[in-house]
Image (cartoon, rainbow, N blue to C red):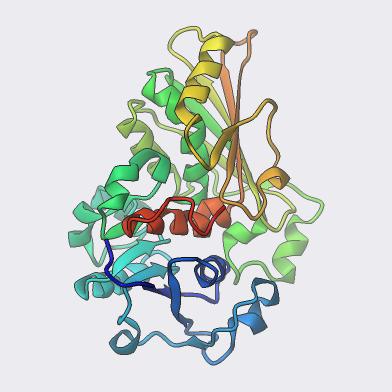
Length: 336
């Protein structure tokens, strides 16, 4: 736990969608204080100029660890590959880090390098905790480095964890719909928007980098399956819905599914079992996830749906949810 009254939090990469929301949440947080906010491409500009609706007046600076690492915590919002050396340098200075990239999510460096790039800080992998708070709460509280999950694995694992623990997943197909903000700020220019407006299309079929993350965590929960995962772009700015089609190894009654979901999430502040399939508008700009499960009596398949805001529970507000217990704070602080 920190002895500092208001631990300062560096936001590295604050000019992107995720970093800007993280800065907004930390700026209003009752315990943390917003430290430096950095950006290479927008240094000298204020966050309020880039994102007026976040109402954060801090000026962006180019990252200089000699000056900016004098903080207690950092949220690193860099792309994969670029994050690892910054995280390594911050950890060497004793800074507690929540990393939003994929660089520390996969425990097997070989798997990471198969899907991403050569890893520049593999020595940190054994200490990194996978940051889905609902699954790894105690480990996160003791961690110095938390790897924030990807948005698709966040929704998928919250949908499937109760079934995985019960040994009820023999096979699973995950069909996901996401808004264009998931591609990042640089990709969401007018040309990109025109390509998705009045359109829905799958992308990265059979090759999405979040797939091994799902497989890793489902196996840890007791379901060693190869997930079939197909994401689709839809004409929304933000929001995400995953539809999980599970083949169970034995028949599952609706009453059993209802009980599994209710028991798993009865005490969770941010995961809500809802009475009908959820929509993304239900959870927009919140840290909440809405889950609904239904057994198809004709096929015997179990259908589980989960909706999140991909930039909030899928990224930035989840980072704050992780940072809170790392400093002994209530998980909901600054997120209610």
